[in-house]
Amino acid sequence: MNGRFWARHAWTGTLERDVPNDVPNDVPNDVPSDVLSDVLIEVSDGRISEIRASAAPGDAVILDGLVLPGLANAHSHAFHRALRGATQSGGGTFWTWREIMYRVAAALTPESYLRLARAVYAEMALAGITCVGEFHYLHHAPGGAAYDDPNAMGEALIEAAAQAGIRITLLDACYLSSGFGLPPDETQLRFSDGSADAWAERVSALKDRDHARIGAAVHSVRAVPAAGLGVVARWAGERQAPIHAHVSEQPAENEGCLAAYGVTPTRLLADHGVLGPRATAVHATHLTTEDVALLGGSATTVCMCPTTERDLADGIGPAREVQEAGSPLSLGSDSQAVIDLFEEARAMELDERLRTRRRGHWTAAALLRAATTDGHASLGWPEAGRLEVGALADLVTVSLDSVRTAGPSQALSHGLSHGLSHGLETAVFAATAADVTDVVAGGRVIVRHGVHQLVPDVPRALREAIAGLGA
Ligand SMILES: [Zn+2]
Picture 1 (cartoon, rainbow, N blue to C red):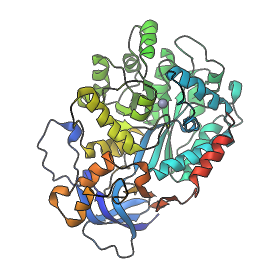
Picture 2: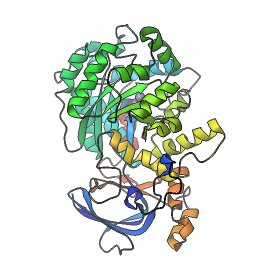
Picture 3: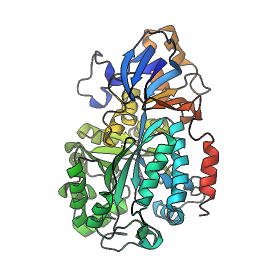
Picture 4: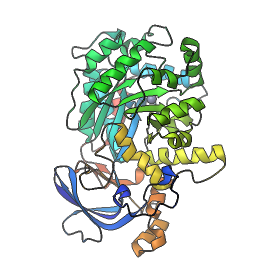
């Protein structure tokens, strides 16, 4: 895909390296916040071939706002979108929420999952997400029988991403147990391959393609017995593939793990070779000091999902501590309570403010780095998530002109030097997904002026896909 785009403003992040770093030990905030103006971006073969500031638009496609690299949604369960609004009445806990979630899981077929995921991924595209990490565990037919193609459900997700114009890393999850030493329950039979070796054999039949890469996942230490952890880790290691795991989202998981194995979930994963630079710990909410050191010391990414964690009353994870210990951070919409990575990014900072009663834990640029560069890297797409020559041409335009964003950022157009990064603060602290106007993925325009180019009526697609489930 070739093309030429002209951005009124563009955050070039890692491109501009001449910014003095006056806080040398402050790693999380060592992210340049430079915003360039009148930026011509040439694309050849889906990649950025040239970036030039202070250029005339000529015949380029005009992106009228602040252009960011594509956003990576590092943790998604597409079908949870069907629960939006359905789990908000009354009280309940994570565990009662899960009961309702299981009813939706029980209703899905490869055909209905394709329809639902296509609509959900189109919603993500409208929000500026150009790559999704789909943490996928709904593998088999009700009762646990394999479909004719044992990967029919995973293939449906890969096809859904293609139809929505975004990239996907299918994080195929091993899920064998309903709890420490317990067999899967009736719903969970759909998740289970019976053994870690059978999981590995099935997943090995899935192949990468242009828009899709295959990664591994350990659903959790609840769902994969210790003996299976090494099998999943080796499978990912042989392929240099990402490996993700839900970690310590709930104190009950920690208690169960301590009772079964005498160690924390993080320690158990470390002891079986799961942690490392290709690994992501999702949530990591309830950690010990040793857990923080294990995650950081192994450079395991930590994926925060603040809108889900607050929806499920999980707690606030130690994002700042794990990052200081060495973990990159990524962000995910997880339960799809909302799909808005700007909200996830600011929630991480704002939750930390509430916890510490102090402001300014991350700059806007550092939060955006989690939503772009580091998120993509955690999904096995290190060539995406940055505006620089050679990177995949994923461009997300945020309007600086909407009812939410108009105002301070306009200082940019008048060249006020102190205003040079204001667009970033606006994007992170005021914009919502609704302010994304145009999205380019791999040089292809998939959203133009707020309209998805492949799924023209996304609300209708969502409505029909969810109504069709009858759950
Ligand atoms: Zn999850």
